[in-house]
Length: 361
Image 1 (cartoon, rainbow, N blue to C red):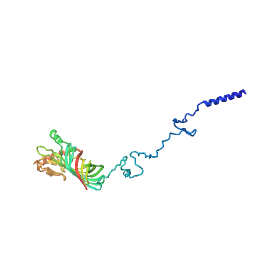
Image 2: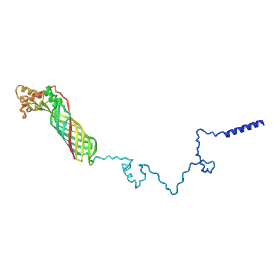
Image 3: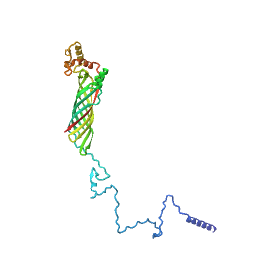
Image 4: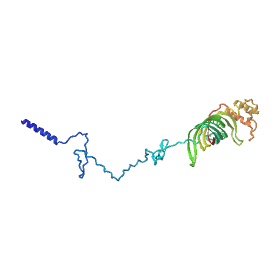
């Protein structure tokens, strides 16, 4: 009996402790929070129901619900009469949409393909002259096979082709002059090659006239005539020259072409004409011919009495100069010294500025 009473008391104490202890929940279980109710609020009539959020106030009968304003710059999906301009498309993009940038690249107004171009260069001058100076005129013809490629034929004539004042000072002051390898003069040239225009663009002149500009590059091959100064200009008379024959020419150039309208263009180019400067004959007379004529002069005889080759133009060393009255035979020893072995050789670069205009048809 005593055991039953002790067991009952133990059971009663255990139940009492469990009832009075707080309810333990897992650490990761969410804890529900409720908003305290005001005194004037009515309690939920349903016992044990979860309190609901604060209800939104009911709309008044006379109020009309207005749509939310559209985002700035947005274009409605459905075309309407008010945004008809915004629905106009250019290359797949809305034209009048402020958030869309439309770039348009127009084609050239006047295409060059299969057109002809005649070029005149009234200004053609050497800009790298140290021992030589060249000033002349030139012309060219270009057939534009494609928009950026064409065949070119060009020619020029140097009306002024003389040795520089620097070389004249060497002769006058130190009794020395530049070798033929650095002072050979180029009198004329004829060349053929190609022209390419890798870049081109356009701009407006006075907001009314549209001008097209392009970068032109050309390369060509050809032949040209050369001469060398025999006697410099001094108190005894003007300078004398001897023809040194034809030379192989090579040319590279580049510059700008500005086309105004459909038929006219202005050109500014820089061209480098390269040629060999080996002087082995004067007026067609080689070293053996000039030695033979020089020997006859030493004996008091005329140069024509010497036995020379058929290519030697002996008449250029006979008679008197019509301008100065000086005997031309005095040029024989000068020409002999020019071609006397050892003969120096070099490659000359005649870098020139070409300024002109062209007609396109």
